Amino acid sequence: MEYSRGKTMSRRTFAVLLALEALAFAWMGFALLDRARHQRIQMDFGVNQWGYRGEARGSKEPGELRVMLAGGSAAFEPGLPYGPTLGGRLYIELRAAGAPERQLYSVVNVSEPGAGADSYPAMLRDYVFLNPDAICVFDGYDMPTGVPPRGRRRSLVFRLTGYLPVLTAQLLKQAGWMSDPDGGVADLLQDGRSAPPQDVSCAGASAGYCAAMANTVSAGLRFGRPVIVVSPPSVSARHRSQQQSLAEVLAREFGRDSRFLYLDLGRAMDLSSPEQSPDGLHRTDIGNHVVAQRIAAALLKWTPFVSRRRT
Image 1 (cartoon, rainbow, N blue to C red):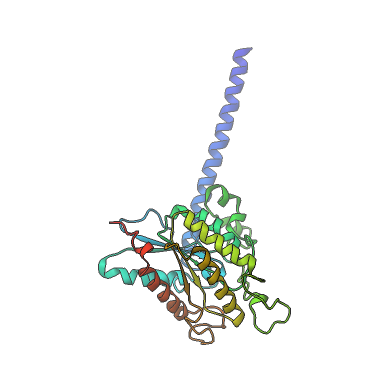
Image 2 (cartoon, rainbow, N blue to C red; image 1 turned 90 degrees about the vertical axis):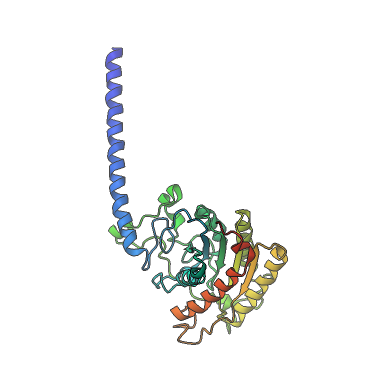
């Protein structure tokens, strides 16, 4: 009796092992197909297998300095292939600056379309394994809150493994992860609107936003990385007032910390110029070139960043 019961258990165990092995092979096959699809789209309008824009980066080369670009739609730039985006142009600027001395630079754009500033600390935590030497926070104009509907943290697979699949959505002909649209300019930041409150400062209607940006800086510093917050080109007088208020709040809280830097690019480019912006909001390749130049110049003069160079 005992022997028979033992044989039954062995068969059940064997069946379970076969089932697990079949699942493993099925997952491997799916992963290979999914990875191939990632490679086809990641340098165009999509993301790599780890859920961020551009080429997937591994361990850094000796002496390499890496910049992490974090933010929402204004940093991700849905609708643009990766090359002419801010992340792509920043990499080109840094690479050109480092070429004479054979200094290596890389840029990882972990921003997320439709993401709110209150989701940025978790964004940094998800990608701290990329080991950046500086974090560049570039926020936008739409002021959403939380994780967007198609955000990567909505994916169970990403939350469990850090891998962001794309194949399932394509097979089901559904919108994929990281496909949330650009929200444009928030009503609060548009000039000539009577409904939004007049006080757009951090002491008024932007209090939650400013607190979220401060929490993002705190998170980056806790991870031991210097953090630069970049004010994007001003889209309105209200937006300019909000960003000036944010600069004052961040200066009071982090101004004495050499690992923090605020870069005001509100007037860095002319959004009314068709050469630099197609619609008065988004940036062309030339517009991103202008912004990237300013960010690269600030980084290359910033001691907390350049002092992290390894030989």
